[in-house]
Image (cartoon, rainbow, N blue to C red):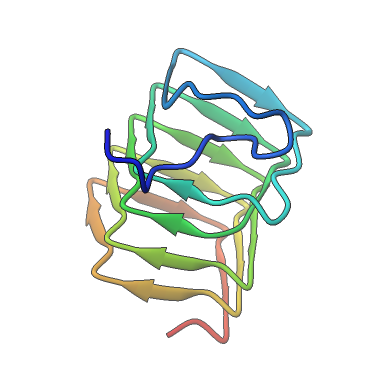
Length: 111
């Protein structure tokens, strides 16, 4: 990984970049950048995400996830299910959606 990649939890100073078979419940990721991060077979429940750069989400389920003022650059969503996901003031740049399911997803002021 390049030195531009940042940890998942900036506040906790974790250096791990790949998360597999992980479930995050009620985990706020406020003002946290997920740069060059891979989430494989990961479930996010009631999670707020900010700033996703060069992120790959494979076989990832997002339940009740809020993306507020979030920038998605070069994000790949493969076999990803989005349930009750709210995208507010979210910018999508070069986002690739492969076999992605959108259930009850709200797109507000999304470019």
